[in-house]
Image (cartoon, rainbow, N blue to C red; front, side, top):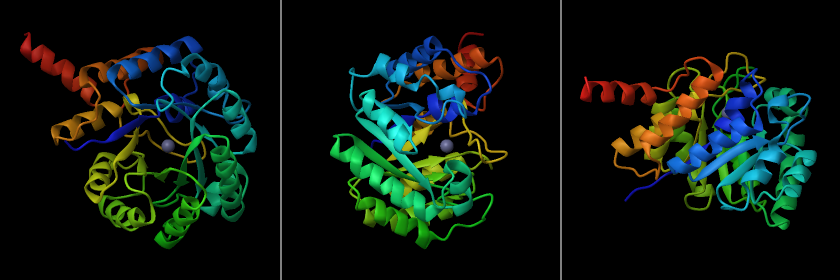
Length: 302
Ligand SMILES: [Zn+2]
């Protein structure tokens, strides 16, 4: 059977974008629901400056609560050397290290131009790998940038080729600004795959323009097998004005399972996660499947 790996990033990409700071208890409740639904990888937070992103200030505490159950299950986002030290100290065995293909986005996000960020991230990946941590190397703004417009494919492919030399075991292309379309996804994925080990490419797709699900399916058809999603459809980028959430995990599970592609995730159970987020945030989220299932239950039990 065809399978995909879904990485839920709602606790990181989702919560970093919310004004409300979630308690450790609430984060644990969400983590446990994600795990029970069958999600195989959960990005629990990022190791960034807590003064800038207070929502992520307790990432170490959360990691320490959940680590040790399954090394492959828990991951975190690192952007600089301080973050890597924190990730190593709390015992994480898998991290994501990313840089932006857009010079302007890179300066705004990490205060460094692209060239410097590439050198830094490459060094950090080598350090992490030497310490026994498996690294997913990511390229943000791979499909365009709100500040710079189109990002040349050659630049993204050159970046991936450099990252492939560092010891990273997975590679991520992120549509940080939601500017990709199904054809641009297909074209870039087809060119990226030959540069990388089999089944090591993942896609991170924001739904800013309403095409993230179409982009995900296009990426799957082109050969990508790992997808970042966010329960409830939470998410955004702090330095991209108007950024919308990721593909809702619930909606991704629905479309893959409907196509006969196994996610290993129980649709009914994963829909409870979006409902919990909606109740904690006291608003409706972009996810569709929670409401679809509720309507189906009402039709079956009028
Ligand atoms: Zn994102």
